[in-house]
Image (tube, rainbow, N blue to C red; front, side):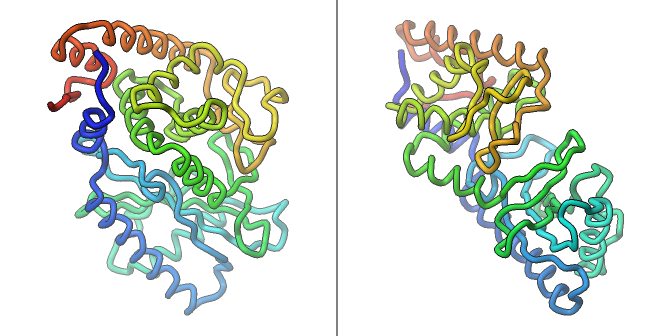
Length: 314
């Protein structure tokens, strides 16, 4: 049997999604953090920070509930003005972010601001369970729309927080199933223990399918066609307006903000093969579940994809 949109959306809302109340609470805390940082900037203009831009799942409204012992993540792009955007020291910028945080929160220990990752400074608010990742970006225009950011591979890439957020919102406006399908895809990735696959990759796959095939006819169809795409077409690559042909990486997903950047470049061949294998199994499981006569048997099949917490009411 197939589940209705109402049934699946109830599962997503009750079991997966960070509640609207919690999202508002965490967004307000990010807002207070930025207010404190802005106040320090007004006192001391030596930091040369042009703008803070909120990013990531919390800003887009696609965060899932955190797993036990894990914080809710929030991302903030910190856009710096530098003398030469082609030649800058990212460690220096990370140090400036940490120094600014220490000035804004004198009651905290310097150890509360973790810059050991090499690309970001993490701030954890233990009482609320929120972790904010501040990412240094060198601004490339007057409005701090585009900038250079260091990738996880250690190279510098041009990208745009604003374009990424706008890109998601434009696609969510076209297809109301994008957000719940993305939440289920994130849960599936976690339950299948797929390495190397980020939420952003899944978001862009679903968005690409909206462009290519139009809005999904149902939430289950949105979920199902993601798996079919991974099985059949992932090897062709994904691009939004440009072409994926100039890359030779195992997985190619062209950055909507920069056609010269493959955001999936770090995915290894073994990780791609594991993703395709899991997608094939998921598609077959959903097809099998569709032919089952009863709710209990169908729920059991879905649990193979999304875990024991999967439940359907009604």
